[in-house]
Length: 208
Image 1 (cartoon, rainbow, N blue to C red):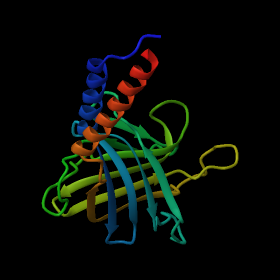
Image 2: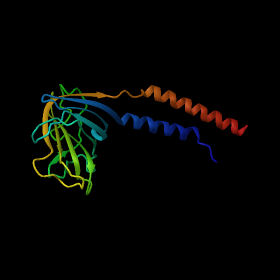
Image 3: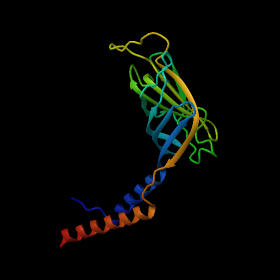
Image 4: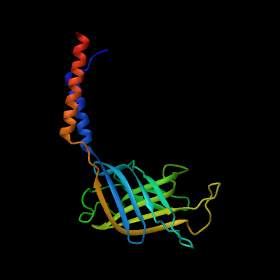
């Protein structure tokens, strides 16, 4: 088997460092004025969220007796035509429009999400745009954000149980947006040099 040359290994190291510099993970927390709260995480590449998840608490029923549900949750749905908008639809005909564009910064001074915002969903059925649970988080202005949840109530056979909808509710509030610490470039470089030294030692020992 051929050995990797020092040049090839160095190239691989530089590629890995470049990829680490492009992608950034963020944690976020939404605190609603009406009692709906959410936490989640997203992975941003080139100003667009590519993956992530959200968990929402304090979601009220639309119909009486207006008792809160435990949680609503979903995964970020990547936009294949990014950065154009994409529409998701649930069993009840509700929909959300989103583009997953993010402007990293302090959400109290910078509007980090536009008025399309992030699209999360769970319970996929029929095709790639139909989900039972839809969650949309968008920005109104710096310091003001809205969280929307739509979810149809289904029977044991997957059929929608009449109107009104099980969940169709929005809450406005604040958002915190925190980058997840990553290994520094210097740390990655030193780790890469250590790996290169090990590879060279291994190659030298095989030749002796």
